[in-house]
Image (cartoon, rainbow, N blue to C red; front, side, top):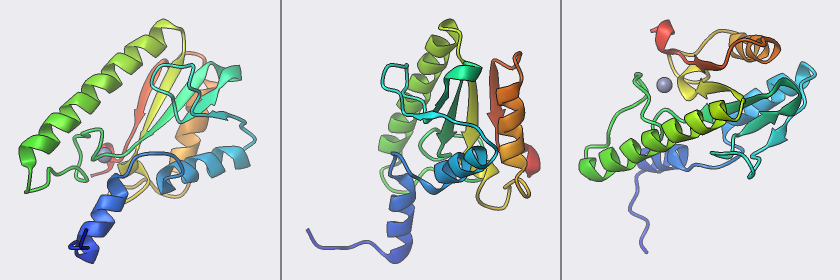
Length: 154
Ligand SMILES: [Zn+2]
């Protein structure tokens, strides 16, 4: 198939490819590892296959791309083409996230959702604030569910 994407479109596409080893995820992994936290990656036995699993803290961390997970932030914008397709796709991703959250909480896991906009773009948090927030979450025994995002930073 002919390559018809502009460089901007290609970059956009790349940022939308889900999976492991995305830049925001690597940032979180490296930051927490440097602070002595050890984790498992993408445990298939757990609902939603969390990006990072910390058995000893009974906690999981998801690193969410704002586009794929339909975050209400400045990084999310439906593409002008095939808008309906994307709206449906993202609504179904959000519904799946909700089911995953409910299932994990029911099993007694604590959950932090780290949103891309806390790490990249104009709303990103400063320095290693994101890592500190993750650390506080892990060490807390009370926080069951937390969103770490750049939204409060706009
Ligand atoms: Zn966001």
